[in-house]
Image (cartoon, rainbow, N blue to C red; front, side):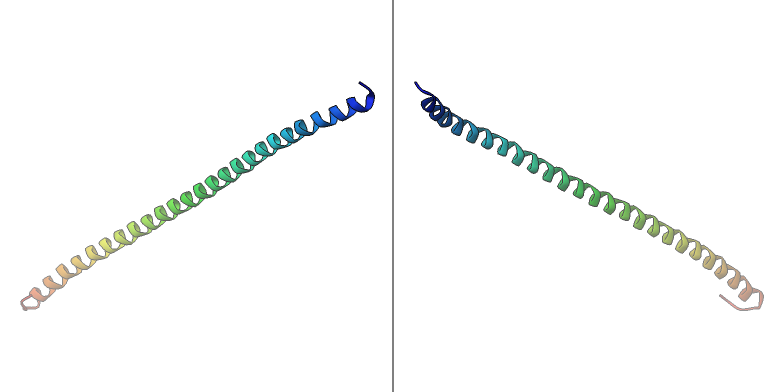
Length: 95
């Protein structure tokens, strides 16, 4: 076996080995890119859910504040009704 034959055999063996290595490396890169995409999507969805939850909590607090204000206004108006009825009776009227 001379040097040319050894070189030719080495080239024949190196070609498929290099192709297999490139294919395996490509699979790993694709998997890594896919995993990064999934993590990015999960993070984005999580941030949107947290924002929606925070907004809902703020809306609920605002609704509670409005309900408390309405109840206080009703209490004031009811006491005013009692006062006015007493005034009507004092003036000789019938409520």
